[in-house]
Length: 397
Image (cartoon, rainbow, N blue to C red; front, side, top):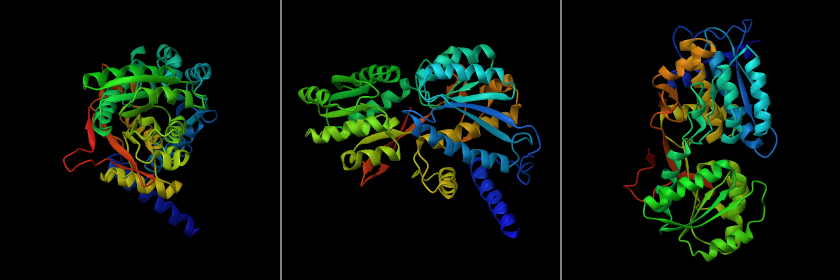
């Protein structure tokens, strides 16, 4: 019994440390956990637990688990426990539509998080908008994602912001102005390719070749022959971690030694695992890096590693951030669907391990002034890119 009490006290102490660092814990709620006998406040999640993107769903789940533990240990939301109902969509637009219909019909669900890809999320957006249920796409970077209506929100860096940052990094890191581009041939990849090409041109660089590939493609050798023939100074990838790692391995096997810059979607321990020595020196960006010295980041990293035994990554931190943000809004505005929408429009300096603090542009329903951190794979691990003492680690948008 004493051991149980000691563990409970340690959980509360650890929770308060994290939430205090983030500015979430409030004295009136800090000593009492949520009452488990009260009706829970439920947030629906649509995301991939199986299928090609299942790893991302697993990363989300770890972030959600920690956020739920901390929020409920510090009083829940208005004394009620916070719960997540996670439905597996495989990030398939047909399934996200079915899940959206299920969520909007369930009066217990006060907001929705997801889906993983913008295409899957956007297929369901009209359903959420018409029903007046907030859809919060915390990994949805498509510039048009929030344009469906006033119930569609995102704290993700959108492609129109991310691709100029990636182009800046490419021009800085590749050591030349001729860039070959490989991109996954889906809506996200094509949009990113166009935005990157435009941004590179504005920075005096040229995309000398752009090769699209399918999500399930495994053999990139013919595309790499065409890339080689363009004689690029460097190569840019608009990929996820699995295909990005495979492309980089085949690049090196084909004797292409040019530096590589990849979109932040490759930032995952799995990219290092799958790519091995081939991904050494690959450059990428991320909105979150566990080596960031900010106190709120280090407190979060300590709590996450204590719970899961591994460092948090970009996707687990985004999931944690998104759930914590909604908990903050619900605490301030109440567990009503319309009140949550209104609360997102007015919340100011909400705590965030990704951005420090968050406020939204109520017109675009996206984070005001997000930033990205520049990384490079060094000695088999992600590290801050420091090409010179005067180079900034962060590229502000």
